[in-house]
Length: 73
Image (cartoon, rainbow, N blue to C red; front, side, top):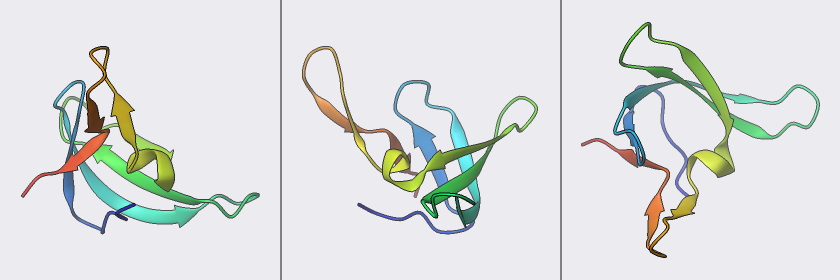
């Protein structure tokens, strides 16, 4: 699993929307690592997702596996 870094830009597999990593944090009760990221579209809504989910693979209907978020170079 690759951990994102502050300031990196990622693209979502389904929508192609881009997001900027604005913080890496810990869940206050479980101490789970989470990624805080901001949409680079629309109103720039801020989102949070467990780090393991941010970096996981998704299986498409045809069985192909893709990264949920891909780093934009």
